[in-house]
Image (cartoon, rainbow, N blue to C red):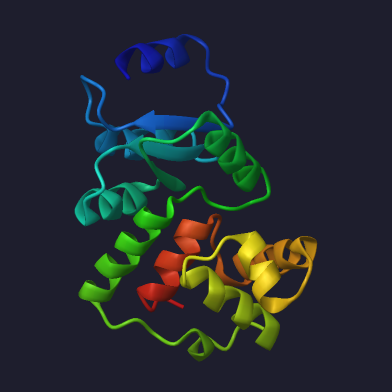
Length: 178
């Protein structure tokens, strides 16, 4: 991590996407998230780790990570997650999403999605499926609408809810900050 930071001090271009392994020596990856987020606010940060504890997932997301992928995974999975990120989504392993939801549920009772009043009924349906951990494609199949329609709903939801990522949206809904 220190080498990367040194490189970017000399070459200040903003990375679009950064995969951060929490298990590397030196600076704690969890602490690095906040530094990267403050230095490069538009950079998407995706954590890759084998640490699947609820506390680690929670800390990574609340520190500003846009995604959380659990090792091991295949190269094709990374390619799929990059496509998800390009479409405005968040790269979150299903197991990590489930643990994040469990962590949020232990902190407070989960609010009902329809309580927010900002979204159309269809946007609420899309949001409800995302909170359940479904991918955009699964939402498309579940609601019998095209992937592009789901993507359009999600973009409008992000604007209405004042968030920039799927993980931030889910955290906001589950923490009843809506």
